[in-house]
Length: 395
Image 1 (cartoon, rainbow, N blue to C red):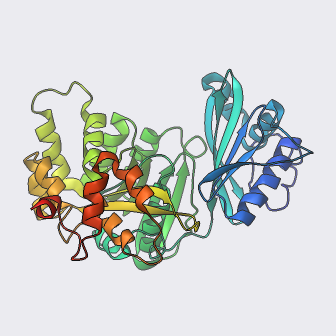
Image 2: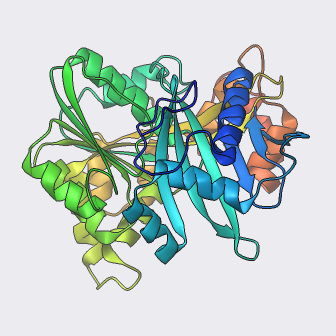
Image 3: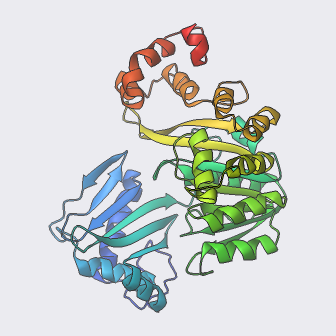
C-alpha cells in the first residue's frame, strides 16, 4: 500500500495510487476548501471543478487542470473503494463512501448525469465537532430534549440543511456528559466521535455491514444506550427504528421533510405506505405517541451580512399534551402547540433572528421564505411586544 498524500489520512481499501492525477486534484481542492472554510466539492466530467464557499458554488480556475476528466474520478474511486465496492458501482451506477483527511472527513457520492458523464460530490466535514452551544439551534432546548434516556428523536430537513451537524452535536454532548454506549450506523460515516464517557461504536454501510437493516438488527441485539440510525428511507429501517425506541434505546434518525408536522406525515408514509388500510393511521399515531420524544426541523440560510450560513429551525417536544394530540390524530392542535413556551415554531425562530443584532436576515429573506404571506409576516415581525401565535396576531 502506498503512502497517502500529505494531509490525507485515509486507510484506503482500493488498489489505486494516491499520487494519481485524480487524487492530486482532490487533494488540492480539499486544501482550498479547508483554507476558505468551504463546505462542498463538485466534480463533473468535462466541467471545471467547483467548491461551495459561504453558500455560493464557485468554479476553480486552473491552467494545469482546466476541466475534470472521467479518469480523474475513476482514480479517486480506485483509491478509496475495494474491488467489490467498485463492482457494485458498475452495477448500480451510484456509490456513497467516505475518505478521511487531516482534521476532516469527506462524505462522497459518485454517479452518472448529463448523458452518462461521471460526477462526484463531496461534503467536507471538519473533524472538530461544533459544540451544541455553537451550532445555532437553541442549545437549552436540545439539552432538555436529550435529557431523556429512551425514545425517538427526529431531525428533519432537506439535503444540506445541517441535520448531520445537529445530530453530531447532540451525540457529542451525550458522549461527554453521560456514561453509556453509543452506536452509529451511517452511509457513509460523516463525523468522527471518539469515546469519552460513552463507548462509541461506528458502523459504516458497505464497509462494516452490508446494509442498514442488517446493521440495525445486530445493533439492537447489543442493546446500546444511544443509537444513530441515519436517514430513514424505507419501511424496514423505520420499523426497526421504532422497535429500538420502544425497547428503551435512545434513538436518533433523520428524515427528508420540512417542518415538524410534515416529518410525522413523512414517517407515517414510509411505515404504512400510500395505501394504508383504514384505521392504520390511528394505530401508528398511538404507537408514535409512546416512542417519539421530539422533532427538530431545520434549514440553512445565507446571512445577508456575508458571515456564512446559519440555521432556522423549529423544535417540537413531545410532552403529555403532544402525546394526547398524536393519539387523537389532531394535527391542528399539534401545530398550535409549536407556539407554546415549551416549543419553538419556525416563525418564532425567524422573529428572534429579526430582532437579533447584527441582523442576518432582511426583507428579501422574508419574501423568499413566506411568499404571498410576506406582508402578514412583516407585520408580525415588527410587533415589538413579542412573537404571538397567528390567531393572537390577527385578533
